[in-house]
Image (cartoon, rainbow, N blue to C red):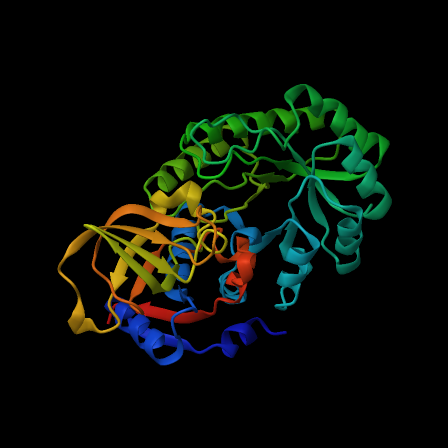
Length: 400
């Protein structure tokens, strides 16, 4: 399948930068009844974010973390812009390969893989993966011995990260030497570099410097053991695009690499997830129910925490909310204390509690911005509501 074919399947609507509201209204009115939410993906935003990445990290190849959002149009656009891909499972690998993307653009970045997934990676030609235990070495030796390996080291603890990953992944400093010896000198596998991940949404840029220093120490251990020169440094993820912290992190990383890895032949990669899709996706929902209790109003919409809003239980501060009457002339000026519920019969299915909204009517829209990261694709079919089938419309905004 050609990389352009997925984008070709869905028409890309060219709209002005300030035309999103008009587009949302038109799509909702013409094609969607209440009960069916929809997404809008702005491909121009993806282009801008790739420019931003390349400016801040000119020497770091992004391997987009597919688990964050597997929308084919997003993956295709990123591939066309030069990104590679971080996959964690057989299904993710196949989802990328099905778009015509070469297996040599994939890293199997899961330190613990099922044997069936390792066999599949070998069969389709995905030949780069991570590891952090002797058992994983044994599995790879038996089922994919030609695979190149990155040693996953435990990252320094960033207490401000939304989801620190060091508890589950990565070798401790004292484990590096024996594990490298086992992988290279005993099993005879090829370890070509070091990988780390400081955690989702890192808050302390200096953590990256410490992690890079630890990676340097692992490279030095490999040299001491006589292992052929390692060449790859994988700095993982943890990046958001919508704050100045990204530029701070990039500055720290670039300076640390100069200090600890002066070798011009070093290959640097990263595994950004939410950096690319978070701000590019907009979710449009319909008001399907309403109850007035005194001065407060409760609304039901056709999406909830068992669909796109499951991750927002943890990162709701990133999401923007905009009510939108289906008829532009009927916007209400009355602001009310409001709660938004999802469609399921679970009382915990609360999308937003005690927020200020103008009074809305049935079939009006509530639009949620910054909804591209860990949203639709962590959804379920709980209570019979199939959130995975939510359609995505493609637009490309421009300044004209």
